[in-house]
Image (tube, rainbow, N blue to C red; front, side, top):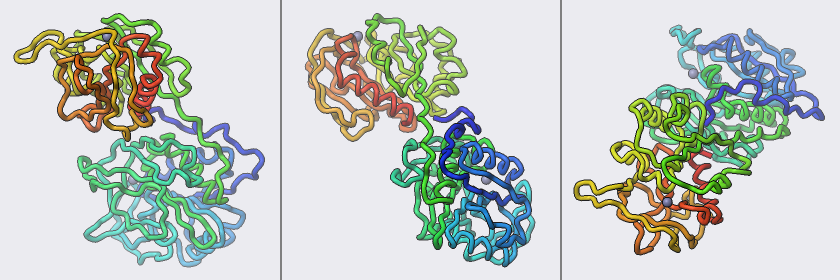
Length: 478
Ligand SMILES: [Zn+2]
Ligand SMILES: [Zn+2]
């Protein structure tokens, strides 16, 4: 989750002093978006990499070859009337001759023969014939007709890399969160090489399909990088937008990417214990993990553990406590945390928490019955047993690479597991329930429960350690 606004700092300090700076020109000055803000932000993002020297042209119409001379890269933050045949020809020649072009968000609407949009999405009623070569150059464009291009409600979605080997995407996280418009039904040209997609959920009036988000086009001897992202400065402030813009622009201008990928942000974990004894060696599971930073909420009552600002502060909540008291406000905070993309790794005795709150059991996908309720008997446990663990789903990111193992730990029996939970680990131990690790039935949430982990013998087991590490990364959407 990338919730922290990341302005120029994300890209700062990565200057490649050896190479001469790439000379970049932004064509702007007209857009149905807030071009004064977005163009300034694009300029800052590119300059902050240390790789570009950036100029802005707010009146590109009527440009000539002389306008473009000396530049390696043209960036289009423009959506408005055509520029005239001489200027358009000069742009085509510029790219075809081996230079770079970067296309931002609404620039894919321009020059397609659609109604020209005015400032602030105002309609003008004016149309011009399409610039056919532009559609070839940019690789994907807005069109009208039955399959009309558009976007659903702006929301938070995940951009997923589909070509991790491309120089632009190498070393970047396989997924990154974006709060933006998700363009759909663009008319894509076969020349477009898609680098990343996003799933366009029907809940936000999307297509229910993956839509292309980032792509490249080889045009003559030149290169084009196209991002559909970047509706406004907030959308442009995500680490994913910044990293792909800088790398995409560098690749478009030079055919290479020298900028090292930004260091992966550490996963922020809130560890919650209390209400049940445990050995202090539990903490060794979290020490010396280079991708983690963690805080320890000593008990749930502490304002921190289920506080309102949890959603902006932590990626993953690790629950290793046994608690019954929770206020309605804390319940809402927990659900808001999950709804906003936060992950939960629930361990061992936390299956017995909040006996009276069904929402928690639905979220975790199970319940340890501290006492009999109606027809359901009380759950049972047995300490200090050898457990043979089978891997029910070796393909899942939480269990990938884990082979069947034997562990000295505690078993539970007669607990409830949601029939809709996705089971990851099982055992045939006679005094244990069959499923001993699963994914929450709430498909969009990133919640995993692991029954193992009573004592130091479990904490020190390599398979348990791997399981926990992978569970935290998956819950953090890494
Ligand atoms: Zn937009
Ligand atoms: Zn225990």
